Image 1 (cartoon, rainbow, N blue to C red):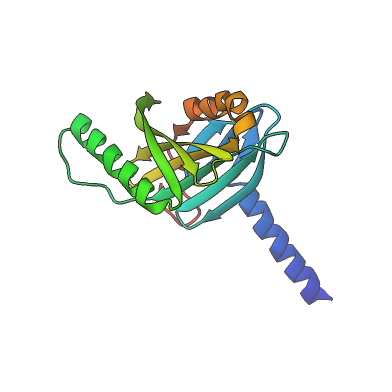
Image 2: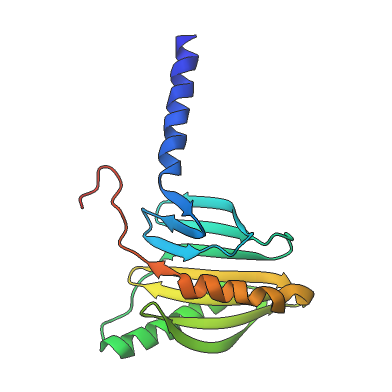
Length: 185
């Protein structure tokens, strides 16, 4: 009996600790350890949150359930050191190529790039061979990490949900991560 109580308390402790890593305050999603925040569109909810090592996937689902925005955080290797603007542009081009070769079965089209919260962002559209789902992708590098923001929707609903994607992208922010227990500040 005491053993079962001990196991239950241990599991509850793990759950409480996991819940402390991310939270939604009002309409802003924050993950303390990864150091990110972004606005969650009204009516959307984090459907899935998976964090492993230095990577994470946050899946937001539209109220209709027919459109999703996935926020993927993963480490990446940085290239050499040119001037800050030149290096940033080269890194973005390299990341676009990496995303294009990693995502198989999609035809990617470069839509351009722009700055979001002092980070140069690559914007791509993607379509699969069937063409019934459309995809919008933003690649946001930050030093040794990148964020891939990926919206997928039916052709019929894509245009109506595109502003939600833009809102998440425009609000995306890399913040100083809070060290986990055992790490130095």
